[in-house]
Structure formats: structure tokens, C-alpha cells
Length: 438
Image (cartoon, rainbow, N blue to C red):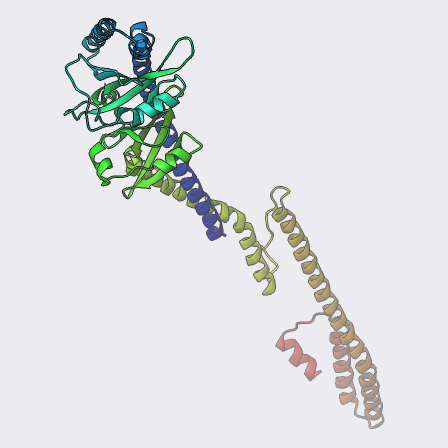
């Protein structure tokens, strides 16, 4: 019974221990997820604000009448074309002076006219601008701005900087006809600075992807592009929740995502599960020590409870063994309460009392029967013996043996007195010898 109780409690403690560890793990991961979501949400908000500011700049340029006039046709005189060129160049120079995070700003028209930065840079002669990705996407975007992933720019000749390109189509105000497109190359470090300021543990990091899964920023950008490092892009794009846990580089990691409705970019926070459970060993030690203490306490309770439960049964068993030996004295059990054991004690006491009374009655009956049989035997023997003795006395008297008659008669009287008057079962040897002599 102790073993069963202990096994039951042991199972319960281990189930509780497992549940506690899982609940703790879930709580830690939940808290870490919420914390990371707040961080990457802030990054998203900062990026949205930054892109919005750049979008406002692009809108100002695209809405500029000088830009539209400059790209609207080929019938402009050289003087007016030069005038528009100088005005637009001045606007570009003002923007570049105000925003050091803008590497390049350019317009390129369907008519082949273009303006780049301060006018000192040249467009790469080895590229067809109208077939470039940023231009085609801007033209196809129906007036909306287009953001590219991070890349090395190749529009400006002999300049190879990492940039993120914002582009937008330039259209006529009246008919909406495509006149060309605006390009704004944003300094890649401006994007990275927004992500690098966030700390997710010692080994955690953030990276940024666009709606197609192309990586815009990653702290290990070179390793990503050389294929030496990979991220779970497909899982991120297909995940229906805002986080998931997976194993990457033989380490269990927590991925948390936040997608901007404005840019379509997704900020991904990556945290090492092992760092989240930096106190895992200490927590598990406390849990196991608590479990051991609970088990010891449970063992003591099991022993006490089992002893209390089995002690009455043990006493009953000992009393039954005494009854088997025929000992009915001092085996009465103390009845306490109205429990099943107390009722069993009551029944046992009633049974032993009844058996004792039956045995005493049987013993008395046997003794009475023995006495009656003995008296019946005596009553059968004494008359014959008496008749024979009286016949002997008659023959002695006829033979004139008077002395012998007197002795025999006296002995007969003594014998009759002893046999009739005595009811004792036990007599002394002296009386028995005297009886035999008579």
C-alpha cells in the first residue's frame, strides 16, 4: 500500500514537474515574443517614418512643373530646356544638402532627357536605364512609389555603393501619360542604423526583407549574398502567425515578425532560445529540489496514512490468530467511530463472545452429562452389589459366623455411606483405598 501510494504521488509530482517546466518555457517564450514584437514594431515604425519622409521628397519632385515640362516633349527651346535644367538641378542640390542619407537623386524621361544629382555625375553608359528594374517597376506601379531591396547601385558611372532605391513614375497632370521616372537612392547605412540600435540578447539580431522575401538588411549581409549563411525566408513568408520556433545552425531559435502595411517590408527578430533560458539550469534545479522535498513529504504522509489505515486490519488479523489457537481471553478490540473497520471490530467482538459462550455451555453440558452417566452407572452397580452382600450375610448367619456378620455389615454400611453421600469427582487416594477396603 505504501508502494502504491508512493508510486501514485511520484507520478503526480513528475507530471506536475513536467507541466511546470513547460508552462515556464511557454511563459518565457511568450514574454520574449511580446518584448521582441515591441522592439521590431518600433523599428517598423521608424522605417515607415523614414520612408514616408523620403516619399514626400519624391512627391515634391514628381509634382514639380519644371520636371514635367523638362520631360514632356522635344519641342522645348534650348533656352527653356536649360532654364528647367538649372531649376531642377538647384532643387536636387537643395535636397542633397538637406539629406546626407540620399546618395543619388535622378530623373530620366521617356524622351531620353535626364538629370543626376548635382550635375557632376554621369549615368553609366553601359546600362539601358529604361530596361532597369527600378524604372520598369515605377512605370508599372500606376503612380505609386516603389521600394527595392538593398543592392549595389549601377546607375551612376564608376560608383558602387550599397543603396535602397525609391522610384516613382512621372506623369502628365492632365492625361496621366508616363513622362519618365524619379530615382532616389537611399544610403544603406541609414536603414541599417535603424536596425542595429535594437538589442535582442548577445546572439540575437534583426533583419529586414521585402514582400518577395528579398533581404534588404542583414547584419551578416556579405555571408547572405555569398550563400554562406541562410535564413528561413520561406517559413517567414508562409507563417500565419507573428512568430515561430525552429532550429537554425543546430540552435533552437525564436523568429518574430512584424510587417509594415506602408512599405510591405517585414522586420524579423531572431532570438536564441538558450539565451531566453539563461537561468534554465537554476530553474530546473529549484524545480527538482522542490520535487524531491515533495516526494519526501509524500513518502512520510504515505507511511503514516498507510500505517493508520492498515493498523486496525493488522490488529484484527492478530486477534483472529489468537482465536484460531483457542484463546478467547483478552482479544476484545476497541471500537472507535462508525467506520467500516469499527463495524468489523464490532462484528468480530460479537462473534468471539458468542463462540466463547457456546464453548462454555458445551463444557458445562459435557460435565453434567458425565455426572449423570456416572450416577446412572452407580445406581446400576450398587443394587446388585448390595443384593450379593446381603446374601453373603444371610449365609454367614446360618453358619453361625456372627463376628464376620458384624464386620461385613459394618463395612457395607460404611461403603454405602461413602458411595451414596459423596458427590465429589475428585477424592484423595486415602479415601479411595478406604473405600476399596470396605
